[in-house]
Image 1 (tube, rainbow, N blue to C red):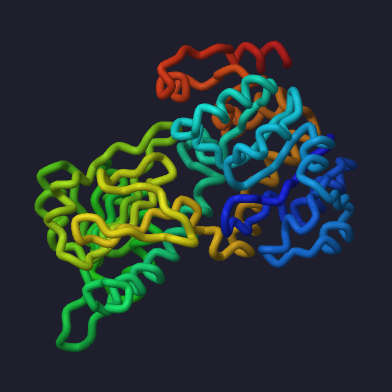
Image 2 (image 1 turned 135 degrees about the vertical axis):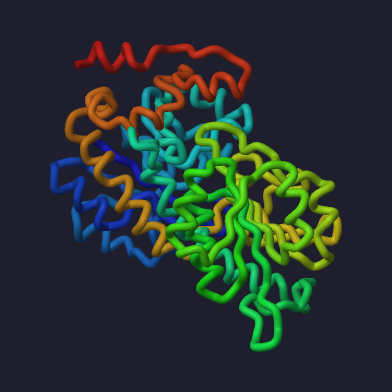
Length: 376
């Protein structure tokens, strides 16, 4: 099988779809991997590193796409990349198609692309194997950025997250007790903040309680509790996830207005539309804006700031799926690997996901289960 790894083109996106270790696993099986020149440079991987494990360097994105039956990316393809799609390809990436621009849907349909979205690949036990490591990275980064944003030069309240003897610690409100929420809670607790985690699922709150031995307070994320607590928060972390769907807005503008000037909102649900009414996507080059006196940090691809760690983690997660796909073909791998099957949003240009169809106000256009069964 031929696999293409193009260089990411979004601003400050330095992660790479496959590290040399991932390429080595594929070339060892006799597969060809075409890596665009300097695709891994931002994460510290030189072209020679790829060549040493059997990868082939190509010198344009057009060639990386043009030679490949499977394209492995990190970020959703941009408009300039749509024209590089090859008919019948499979593209694996963080796609977030429910909030993507219509032109991407058109390009995927026109070229008969099988679109596999990392963020909705889900095991039978409910785990999200590809999204999980990126959520862990974002959670660990949260207090690093929150601490900076709370300083006076950044327009913050002038608060030290961990406080001092005789000086109160910061109060951090985390909405969502999934992987990102738990990772952020661990990081904020480690720096000394007072942490409160809210979620609609009491089972997840029980996991948080057991994980921290009662050191982190938990509450059910209903409107009453959110209205009560937002005004106390120095930092509010939005970590709400409904796989394959737009994130529900749980924090309204009226709630934001209760927060003190110079407080910080970090909406990590922004790649699915955001869970805070006042949020809008920002970028690593311009990560914040102020609304209702509150600093908003809404960067969709925060793990890109630690591109080397994130690229290693992403490759570790996707490699078993990609190796099997290359070994036995797409339909075979979909039949064997439930998480890969769940990640298919479009199959050969046709909508294969009920959630995607619902979000677009359309109907499912192909029965993916029947396709897989027929291929067995």
